[in-house]
Length: 280
Image (cartoon, rainbow, N blue to C red; front, side, top):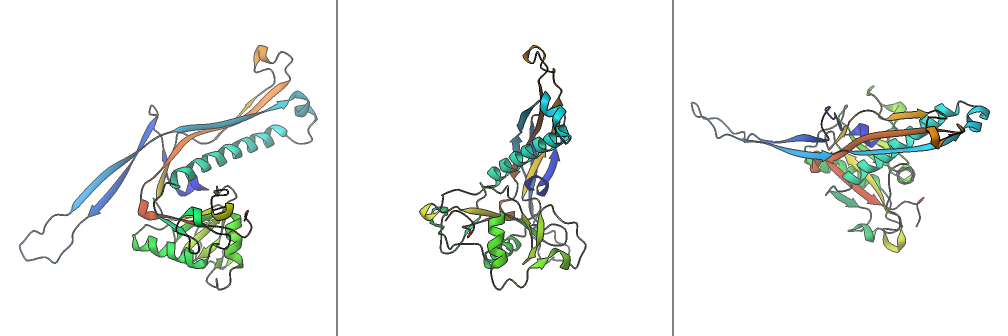
């Protein structure tokens, strides 16, 4: 979810770091006087450098499982291994964007530690974040929308809230934009994606309430660089040589290498709330 929503880049062969260029421009436009050159504006390019991290995991399949399973266990296990690696990479991206400086708290809370059980997400909080992004001139995704990624526990509170008549279900979209993975609809200019892999802050609120982040952002808010796609790897029984003398163990594995970086602080907001479905 998070990887595909960032500005994607591929690590060139022969490098172990990647640099994202960011541009700040101020043209200082003004009324012109005939025959007079105006003052020049500024054009600043800064770089955000990241060092890639590799993630991976594997599991062992016995020779008995390989022969007796009623399904193609190699395919099923390989898909699961790749999914687990993808979730880990998504979690690492969240760790990066959690360092964003723009945070809106639910209810009357002014910090994560003050979030109480009743400080659940509201359409007002979502509208506030969208309009703050607009005021920062954050670039939108296709169709003029921002993106909002939230946990299913948070989405539940948004669904049951009264007065959210401007929520647009998927089948009511007027325009045929390609749907994002996990997208459920749109509200107040934000296309809402729901993922169970959104990390929440367990026991971080008042009275050990779980605090849930909802990320609302525009295009190019953060960048994601990868050295390639997720790899699913299968090693047959006996591949380990003397470590598997009876050819009893095969392995399935997955790995990926990449890293994320915030590119525009003004293009991403984090809403932190509790949830009625969370540990309260």
